[in-house]
Image (cartoon, helix red, strand yellow):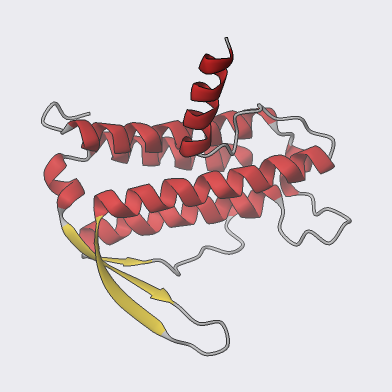
Length: 182
């Protein structure tokens, strides 16, 4: 990371790297079979599809940085990362390398975000943001999907690390709660 980063900048990049580490840990722990298998209980997305979706949000941010506009609805449905854990691992590593390249100036640069906002009609809005704010959003979003992945994996007979899918605020609460109980 750049030495010119503020403490907040470093924390946000560090938090995103934590999420990427969780993705890599998850991908190392889940089997190929579980990664691409649909559950019988009607859960509509595979673990791989959730992983691809989390990756898509980071890729939209990375691509949006160069364009000045993040397309939050950009999806790569059917991409090989849905079936190939190793392809997903490689993408997370590439994104981690990108995170390490971010400067404070790039993090604070204004950027617009385009996204659809209604379910029963097509209504796309564009709103101002910053890379820093969007990194907070995509890491939280990925953590939410990792929690769903952990539940899906459990239903498929896979037991993943207990910290996968735990939100930053929840981890802080648990640290405080456990330190008070001792």
